[in-house]
Length: 365
Image 1 (tube, one colour):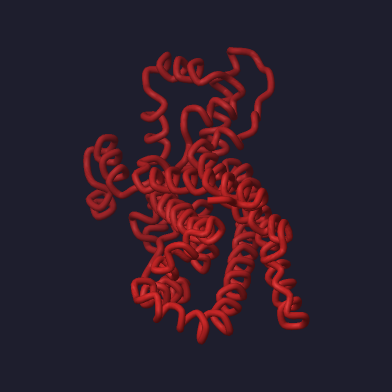
Image 2 (cartoon, rainbow, N blue to C red):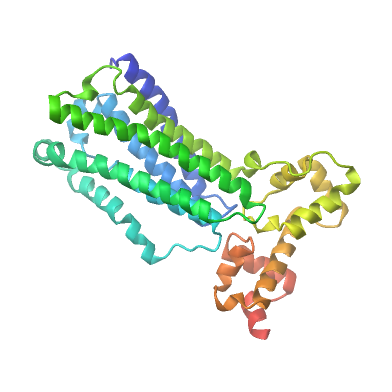
C-alpha cells in the first residue's frame, strides 16, 4: 500500500492517537478513584473519538476503496464528542450533579447518526453505492460536517461558560477550573481548523468545482488536527487521573514544624478534602513536600491519610445535615458534595465512623 508522504505522516500520528484514546478510555470505565460519572463520560469520549478517527484512517489508507463492503460501517461518532465533553466537565466541577433521563435529549442527534450508519453499514455494495450517489454525496456529508462543527463548538462554548459561572471559591477548584478551561479552549482551536476547511471545501466545490481534498498536502493540517485532538484528549485523560500534575505548591519553603499548621490550613480552612480526586500525591504537591514525608506525618499522628480524609468528609456531611441541606438534596447528593465518589464507599465509611447507616442517623436525628 503506497501512501503519499502527507498521508503517511497523518496515518502514523493518527494510529498512535487511536491506540492512546482507546486504551486510556477503556481503563477509565474500570477506574475506582474519583467521580465515577466523570470517568464514564471521559471514557466514552475517548473510545468513540478513537473509532471516529479509525473511520478516517481507513479512508486515508484506501481500505474502504479496496474493500468496498466496509463502507459506511457505524464508526462515525462526531456528533457525540460535544455532549460527552460537556457532561464530563459538569460532572467534574459539580460533584452533586447526577445524569438523569431528561439529559438524554442531548444524545438524540448522536443516536440518529449512529442509527443512520448502522442501517446501511451492513448492506450490499450496490445499495451503498446508491446511497452515496443519491443521499450522502449531495446532502448528508454537508449536513454531517455542519452539525459536527455546530455541536462541537456549541457544547465547548457551553462548557467554558459553565466553568466561568462556577466561581471557584473553593481552593481545590482553582487548578481544576483553569485546566478544564484550557482543555476546552484548545479543543475549540483544533476544531476551528476543521471548520475552516469545511467552509473552504464547500465554497471551492460549489463555486469552482475544485476538490480541496484531492490536492496533495492541502488537507494535511485538517488530518493533523484530527490526530492532534486524539493525542490531546488522551493526555488530558491522563491528567484527569493524576491531578498532582496541575496542582500548584501553596506553601513554598517553611519549617518542618509548620507542617501540621499547613495541613490544618488546607483541610480545615480550605476544605480541600471536598475534591473527590484528592490523593496523597496531590496534597503533598500542595504542601510542597514529598509523598513519603506526608505519609509519615499522618502515621505519626496515629492514622492514615485515607482515614483522616474520610473523617473530614463525614463531619462535613453531618454539618450539611445540620443545616437542613438534606431537605434540598438527596443523601447521595450530599455525599458527593462532601467529597465521596460513590454510594457504596460513603455507606461503608459512614458506618465505620458513626456505627450506623446515614439514613438511620438522619431519621434518629
